[in-house]
Image 1: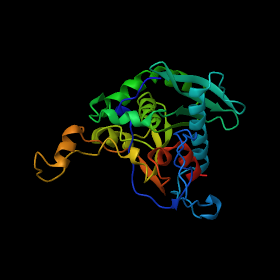
Image 2: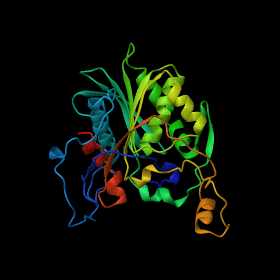
Image 3: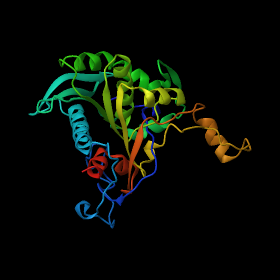
Image 4: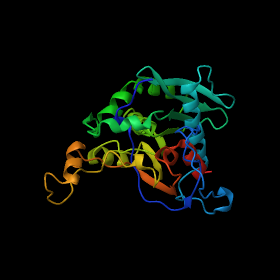
Length: 296
């Protein structure tokens, strides 16, 4: 598998409940990475009420289903004999850079369509280059690496969604890098006249203020939720702005850091739905398992 550049990183905000879920050694897909921490306080999720505060129009059942499908997308990547199992029909597979990044699925009971993207399995590789260049998008400017990956999926997304007759409800979801791809897929569907609702987990900032303004105002985007762990450091990049707002000495540590970072502004899309969990590691705080537990 290829190494991902930091174009494949991620962004976040303030939260509500304090909990503890997977241990520090968990990977993004919940696998144990062999670095479990000891002596930590564990909370019984059932007894810690309320776990999260949900907005009145946030569909928790859809969010749970979306998160479980993202987990399946991680399984799809690792298992060559993978299938969706009962209850769903696979409408199409989504691939980029010769890797499977997800799928489009029809829930046979509800007839809802889900466009699903996984994140990368190698999050620490994202820190190799923090420049985050942008390129043009019909709605503004977006991060170049995210855009280049999504362009390899656009035909598959549109073809698969259009396979369902009528006007089914379409939900777009992803985790980590996959949430950036899901954001661009939501915009792509809207541009092509297809309404969809987005439920994302551990999302990055994807585009500039112009892109975000159009995304948040477009009537074809019927919901735009970002589920965010406030302790997930990988949800803080790209930075909103590299401008410190004050004059800095060119040799100061902050000035040198800012010189190494991107020179462009980024803004989050949608509405954050926040929780607070510190599992004692960057990977543990970012794992899809942590997000699944939070919305359970």
